[in-house]
Image 1 (tube, helix red, strand yellow):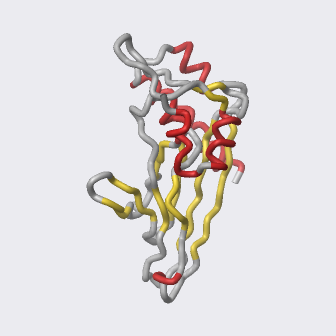
Image 2: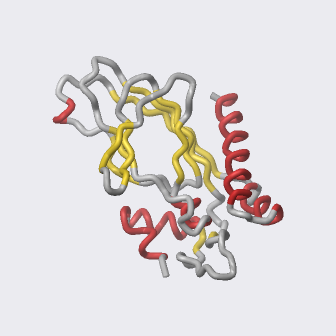
Length: 184
């Protein structure tokens, strides 16, 4: 587990550098974000047992992750779905040897919504197998003050500056509406 977490942290740091670079964020600002006093990380192991009647059970309710990024390894059993505007819920079928990367709320804010967060859920399927997943959450420290970084001279920030701690508190009280509460 420790080795897996170490490798996921290295991958998350690499991905964050690439994402921030794609937004034309300066090297100094990228370093400030990626090495902001030590990232907060968590590894969550999920188990969805076989269910003979999946219509009578819930896997994981629709939500967005608070993190910058979530790196997900899923077993070969289907269940993860993302919501796509104009389409609805779309199945993200597991591919052997691949990882799923979800953008979380914190990256959504930092990128001024250029990298939108991903509304997702897990539904139980009529497969006679247990579904397993490992979710690695890569977050900023709770005292980090975040505000949109990906701005040019013609863009206005969509979100007000807020500490990670305050945003987490807002989201805890207003689940699906947290971003709208800090939006200008």
